[in-house]
Length: 344
Image (cartoon, rainbow, N blue to C red; front, top):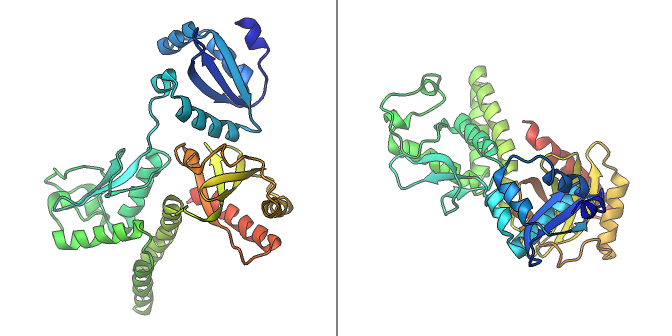
């Protein structure tokens, strides 16, 4: 086994552990295949990993261009082969949703891991979903405690600070509370115009009446909703029968990938260092799509494989009426917007 490990490449890609029957029992990815595999055969305390190592008889690998590509390939192959140790060691990766339970008199807003008609998302982490709930709480004065059923009989500190309607203590009428819940649902369904219009109208009225502190609070809420609407746009983008550019950053890597997507298949990819995004390279990448110079085969990675892994992503519609230079300017502006989304 030592000789096999020493001959592994120091490159990004996926590695495959096989048992005595030549069956794949584990698939992993790394930016350095040799270094990662070697770590399994050192001092290991995890009993599940020890059990895995005892079953390994063969090691295979597949090199990729980058760690991001390795991540995509790993997702694709795990779905294809379903190795037993991937589920045992990693667990089934599921992502949080924001659930609004409208079956109750006072609907709750909380994080859930099951998806149904009252769920919105998914989000890349629980902290990301909680941050969104807190934004909703700031704008609509909703509870952020995450209770599935309101059981408190006394209002909390947020109510006394004017930041919560305290449905738990029935400090608001169900009709008024549910009106705000419907506004939130509409917002998640990208029905923004009416809400922004009402806020801007209130802002102008406050300024006219010299209520500057109240106007400032409304302005802050408008900014928060602008941020939230961009986040929701990332979640709800429709992908059917469209040409899109996908901005992708895996686990906050320093490398940003720009993919060209057609009919829900990834046709080509261009990696960029976040600190060195070159407009000319973008323009050449866009021109290559017209010439069908694809670096990834359409049957290699479907878009659904990207959607099921934890990563930042943002879909940009392909503006067909623009020439490659104009598209590069447009895409560059969207890249900077994407990179600034998490700085709020």
